[in-house]
Amino acid sequence: MKDRIFRYDTIFMYGSLQSVGHIMDYFIKHTKKLVVYIIMPRVNGSANDLRVYERGIVKHEHSVGSSTNIFLYYFIWWYYQNLFLLQYFSRSEQVLVFGGHPVAFIGMSMMKLLRRLKYAYWIGDYYPPVHWSLILFEKLKKYYHDRIPFTYYLSDRINNIYNSKVITLPNKKTVMWGVKPHTGSKKQITSPFKLLFVGVIRPSQGIEDLLLFIKNTPKVQLSIVGVCEKILYEKYVTLIEKYHVADRVWFPNTFVSDEELKKLSNRHHIGIALYEKGEHTATHYTDPGKVKTYIELGLPVIMTNTSAIAVYIKQYMAGELVNGTKELPAALERMKRQYGVYQKGVHALAQYFEYEKYYSQSFQVLETI
Image 1 (cartoon, rainbow, N blue to C red):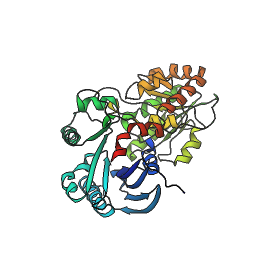
Image 2 (cartoon, helix red, strand yellow):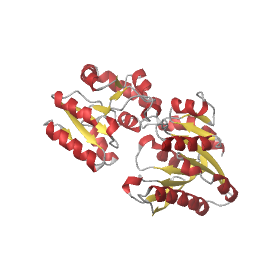
Image 3 (cartoon, rainbow, N blue to C red):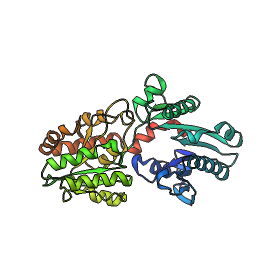
Image 4 (cartoon, rainbow, N blue to C red):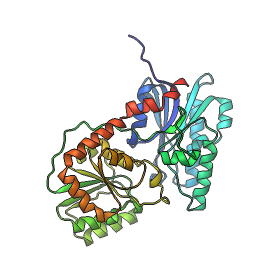
């Protein structure tokens, strides 16, 4: 049987257990030898994972320690990265190290003496300088950005900040999240109209305003799928009780599996993504994974008119852009009247960002390493 041809030869990359972007799926399928270091959030206190793939098949997997202490968390992360580079790659192998956090690049000059490494940096966010720690963090990111030959940006806004203009070169360009197009059947409008919120829950994501909207809007239900800190969860539960909407709001304060999420989305009509607006917010500059998740689930989106993806939502008519909860009722009415049109828009947008085609074009230069 003819040997399978792989686009990429040998890669060490970071991964996540969340499916946003399908980065792991893509590189597992197309890399001859792939080592993936899966970093868990610090607040979880969960162990990190290592997976070794050969020709798309996992050959080895084990967990390594982590810590909730911020300094130990990053030191352990960095320590194991370099241990894995030495342990799983030989001196004769040319390895691409593909990271999205400056921790991945600390000590890279030293590591280049021990292994044949090239580095690629995919910058997924920008934090406005509203605090001294963020100023230092952005300076560190810029330092490594200027010294790494392959740099990618999750939005044109981030691209512009790091280069003083938007650059599009084979080794330096904007690459947003890819998506896997929805393959389910089209939905019909039913009553009640059901909204779905998915993602990590923070105070800046408009849950409080959304609950007030549900209170004032009969025949609309809301499911909140995600996790927040205990104090914040208790605050929202108190509001749900105060507004007497417990029968119309489902909020288990937990994540669900991808399969469960797909089943859940089939019972909903709209994905909701409310953000704080303004250039002082990180969301303004990036491509929120939440919105791409809704597109994959076949759900038209109502989102705050911010972030890099907003212009695509408008262009493809894959949802409605709002400036606040006051505009939600009118946006919902428009979507009810033309729900089929918005579903077609979601399909068209998903085809544009279809991850196999999109990434193969975006990362073509990495095939030469």
